[in-house]
Image (cartoon, rainbow, N blue to C red; front, side, top):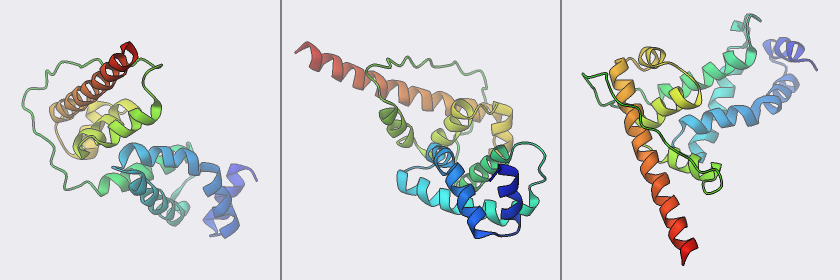
Length: 180
């Protein structure tokens, strides 16, 4: 079935169409959930919750624009609702230097990167994921999270700093073990 047909059938609550739509997007949407969730299990829960919300709101999709983009925004917004109580470190100075993180593709696996991103404190992981992984601007993030742009920049800076330290540490450990 073509995506447009699937969407129309899902708007009529057709279980077979919902299943097909789920199978079509489950891997991609699980990746989205992994970026914003604190663990694999949370990502699975967020994916299931997200699909339920998407199916519940199907009639609101106006067939204008990308269905994938519309659904992805629902997933992200649902996950962010769970972090409403997260306290972001407020910053008055919005002139924060950028931290560069050099990644040696041969020594650092994607699995390790996702693991250390998941280990970030919630506020850092959320801002990092929105900015770096999904390309939101600081202004957009500040509006989504209801915080200042200086705070988004500060939280991104701290996330990058933590990631840089962890990457440098693992690189150093691998280097030392290869020298021996």
